Amino acid sequence: MDRTRVVLVTGAASGIGAAVCRAMAGPGVALLVHTRKNSAGAERVAAAVRAAGAAAEVALGDLADLGVADALVAQAVAAFGSLDVLVSNAGFADRTAFADLTDAAMALSMATINGAFFRLARAAIPHLKAGCDARVVAVSSFVAHAFRTDTTVFAASAAAKAALEASVRALAIELAPSGVTVNAVVPGFVRKDPGAHAAIDPERLRQQVAVVPLGRVGLPDEVAAAITFLASPAAGYITGQALHVDGGLVI
Image (cartoon, rainbow, N blue to C red; front, side, top):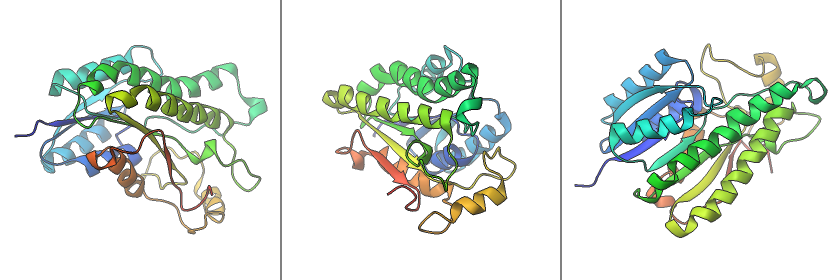
């Protein structure tokens, strides 16, 4: 009998992270569902995962805090015995203008996005090297690529996501000899869950969608499908890449 494939997904209480958990759930899979503080949302996701035949546990913690990333990796291994897939999804969007950004705000974006990925991946490396068809997938954003007058510019988020993609490429080279692949998925405008924080209000979002060639907002499940593929054994010859799931926003 094949052993359980163990997956850690951060920022998984709603949106893309929750969709990833649902997409990956099934017999022979165990998921650690992480959220910063939305325990109710994470428990709902875990319940859906279990209903699909997978094992699931919930983990809380702010990934901007040192030590949380290591604790999450340790919890996944302690609960399920190994770690095969890391999906680094947790983050937030900051649309503050460059001139108005404080040192603290810029540092928070970097710590929550690239810093969290760095600490998660560093803690996961020995377990991934011992894993089965091990994968790392980071969730970036179009904001690291789209710098135009007809789209919102997220200065702090763009810097953090660009750093994240550079980290993905560096880690891909380092882990290639062990067969562990490392990739990024780059969503465009994606529909938020009802009641979730939205960096862009609905009217502004409608204006922004006008610049998307496919003419609509993406769905969390569409982004999750790309992440699930890159996390699968079928994607074993893809590494160091950034796959855009954005309706053609970034060409």
